[in-house]
Amino acid sequence: MKKPRVLLADDHTFVLEGFKKLLEEQCELVGSVEDGRALLKAAVELQPSLIVLDISMPLLNGIEAAKKLKKQLPGVKLIFVTMHADTAYVNEAFKAGASGYLLKRSAATELMQAVQSVMSDNFYVTPLIAKDVVTFFLTPGHASLPTIDDLTMRQREILQLVAEGLSAKEIADQLHVSHRTVEFHKAKVMEQLNLHTTAELVKYAIAHGLVTAS
Image (cartoon, rainbow, N blue to C red; front, side):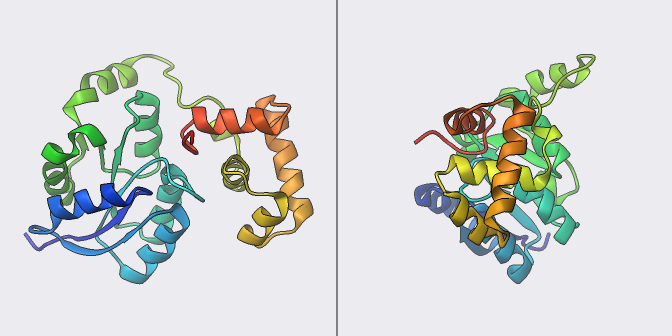
C-alpha cells in the first residue's frame, strides 16, 4: 500500500512529536499544526490523504474543522485522537466526516492500526469505547450534544472565540466581520442556549468540547 500522506493537528507539541514517532516509518508526514484554522489552511496547501486531529483545539475545534475539511477535500480521511470518551462526541465526530476515533491514552498501541484500517476504506473505533458506542446508537432517540446543532457554523465559531477570551473586536478581526455582527451573533447564541453571562458561555463551551479548561 502506498504510504498515506498524513497531516497532524493537535495543540500540544509533545503529542505531535509522539504521533510523528508512531507514524514516520509507514506514513509520509507532510506537516503538523496546532490550531483548527491553521489546519484548514495547511490541508488545502498540502493535500494530505489522511488527517489525524484532536477535538479540542484553539481558534476552531476539531469537529467544526472536520465539517469544513470534508467540504474542501471530500476524499480526505479523518481520524480523531482525543481524550473525550463520551459517546456523544463520537457521534459528532462521525457526523462531521470522521473515519476513525480513538483515545489519546491508547494511541501508542492503536494509531497505526487505525490508519491502516481507515486507508483501506474501513472505519475504526477504539475497543475502549466500542461497546458504549454500539449501545448509544442502538438506543432509540439517542441524543447528540445538547443544542450544539441548533447553532449555525458562524455562531459556533464565535462561541468558541468568546470562550477563548477574545474581545468582540478581536473576533471581528479574526473572522473579517463587523464588531456589530459579532455582538449580534453572541446575543443570539446566549438567547438560544438560555445563557445570561459570558462566564456561562465559557462554561458551556468547555462542557461541549469547544475549548479546554485552562
